[in-house]
Image 1 (cartoon, rainbow, N blue to C red):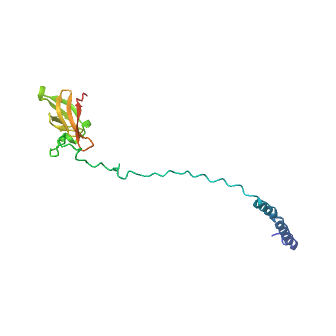
Image 2: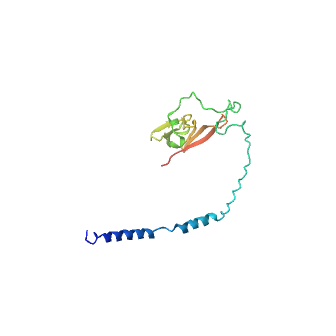
Image 3: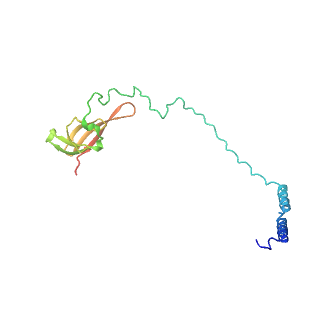
Length: 176
């Protein structure tokens, strides 16, 4: 420390200067207090009116006695015709019934006239010999005719009312 800084007048002057500086920093809160009081005396702005709530019409559910649309319809015995076509549940499934009809390809035929045998290739690229009366496809498709250009098939499909319908199908010769 210098000799000047050790002088008692220097210390007193520094102390006096700090006191004056702090007195000058006295915040003038009187103006702020007056502004706050003025704002509090102002009237509050009017509130926006509440939105009008829409009145909803009540709905009485009157379909308790009807069928649930998410469950299967109950089978009616009178709708299921006993004399109509039906799949034979006791019949042993053939190899080509494991594949959908659109996954099978007719690749040729052997024989002459009414004794034609068709060659059908499955998705695994295995060729099978089929005759009239053999089954193929997943809808109980039975071969009813073999022609040089394709197979005529009759499939059994459910009609939705407990019965079955015969639907004609064709497996054309695959000319690659």
